[in-house]
Length: 465
Image (cartoon, rainbow, N blue to C red; front, side, top):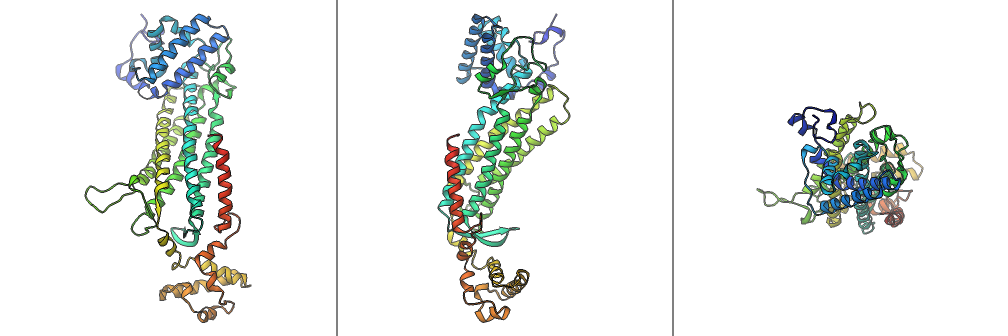
């Protein structure tokens, strides 16, 4: 006597209970319930369109699927581990709803192409949400940059004061990173936007299906050209996890600086209370927990990417049960990146700058040393010689606790007679920043150019969000 499972015809013994629970995926793949119903509706419409199913049967199945979709939206569907996955659970629920005719839905379809379709639809449905949140963050960065073109701050290399820059220039560096993230996600969309439906188990089907028709119903731009590839491909998932990992890395770097800069030692910024927490024992504490959490959550996304790469690396074609492990990381990544983007956006939009502290930090830190070296080089001194002379002045200044602008003209001319009274103007941080007008530089004119480009890009992107 066969086992009472949808696939139980050739089995005579029930699964071990632990094995059944271990093999079931319904605890997590119910996340794709909407997409599974969405795919099934398109599939049954295609079966009717090609006359594989009678119109009356197709209509009855379609109405049953729509009823389940309504019940899903109302939170009225319950799922059972004994039916393994979301596909079998919904088939059982459909059978209860409309009777044995529900069994015709799986004509010319396998769970292999069904689950691949669901996963494509899941990412296809959620990628626009991520792009929208990323777009809003890019907007916030540009708005904040536009308000701080002439706000000065120290630029860093090796976390040491390097050269004075504009705070807007700093922000626009992150704008460029997030712009590339948006471009990567847009490219990922091309590989998400392919329909595996109709590939069946691995070899296609003998039924006269119309894969292009079902793809169009689901909004896919094209179909997989190879049925083996269709059911085994998870490149689109790897691309997604990789892209989000890079995006999380950018957020994490930004968060690291926020954590540093709102500390007592830096005091460059202050976070809104809405994005900070306190201590249960130390009354004075104001902790940048949201920045720390986003920084920390980057690790879990990286883990999901590495996990799936490892899962896929040894799989023979076509479908293998290992591919059940492709989903939890994706679901968690979506649930991680969306709030991370939204919380970070709010935190950035509401933080305040200590402009006086930022500016002061550029005045007595020798970050204008390059200006003096460039000043001498412009007067004909070989740059390497200028570098050495200025380095000696810096060493003298450190020992005597004086900045370069604190040296008298006589003292400076003892180092080089090329130095004239106009050197003090060149050593001013604001002048140093303003003069750096090479393409992409921190000069105010260049920043305004960067802002104009960014605003144009956002205006164009808005039409596609």
